[in-house]
Image (spheres, helix red, strand yellow):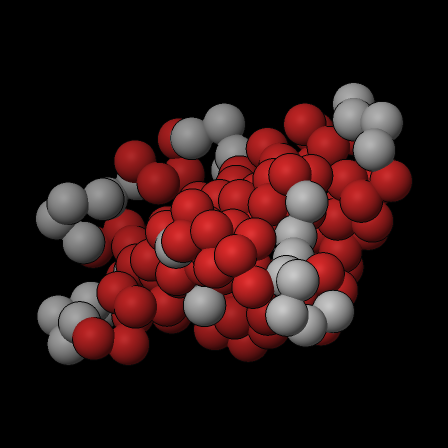
Length: 142
């Protein structure tokens, strides 16, 4: 929905500006430029999660070894955004940093459940995969 709002931003602004005299609710609903920036940032932040969710839901050919790669990319994505947000001054960006910290903790909880309970199985599957072998473990994140 946020992505759709961004694509329709020009039309939304136009509609609200032509109808704001008719009803005061449009003044309350309209977003200022900083709020549109916030929407854009949320869309960028959630894009990787949306891509992987769609990929995992609709692809029957993915196998167990893709899980570590997905977690790796998502942790990197969150860490990258957290690093950028730590340097920012606006209060909404600091609020978003707190949310990202909680998201990282939640993602790590799921990762720990996967890696702890089935660690041997995942590791063996990754090693015998002809595409990955030990390459996954040679990354700096491991």
